[in-house]
Length: 59
Image: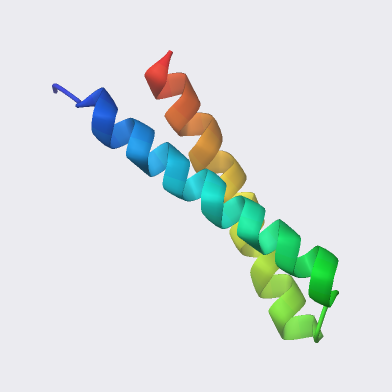
């Protein structure tokens, strides 16, 4: 399967941007409630995995 590195780079940038935005939200707003906190933490874990996988693919 041929993969366009340009697309992978855009996906990586999007994931990194979302990750940083969520981190910044937590720093600024704290943890509004348990559900929101758990949801954000789960998404951060998913993004860490996605970013790691994209970086491996781009190597």
